[in-house]
Length: 258
Image (cartoon, rainbow, N blue to C red; front, side):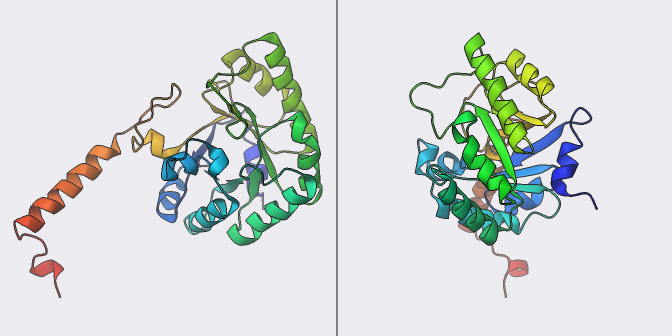
């Protein structure tokens, strides 16, 4: 039987990889039908808690939401973000990664960075923890204005070098966030593992979006976010109808009463 990670690796240069976020069982059970990878992202900080930075997300936040997501996942590869300061050194990273895996039954964890965290990634993989990489915009390290990466020759070379380092360490895929299109293409063609893009062009082997964003639940105006449907309108219509029927004594009717 082919493992879920092996299945992802085999998609390289063959078919696009679908990756979406989930933070609860209900969403996960729907997303699971269409995704190859479900990410419990630390983006839950802004999506659910209105944090202005992912740095405020705790290990407990990630574990609690991941436990819920796990109940809705049956076929997808489940990946959990390791939050800010949960992998500051090798021993801490391994302890926290094992804690996440133990309580959430996830398949892998995701860490942000390349060269700077290579020893940590190496230590995790050596101890049989599956790792997904993340390059480009690194929300946990981001300070100041939001800027795409890989436009200059220096940035391009650094990103390519980092991607090759992560590949050599054994990560099974790399998220490229807001990386210049040409640089994303170069990285994708330079490594044998899949790249998952977010704002990094169709050249990547797959794409990821925050599910709440693509559904129109969030009123975000980030360039790379396309709203494929505006579910807020449907929710509002349902609540409006509920209010009307309660006020006019149409609900609950005999059918909905004991």
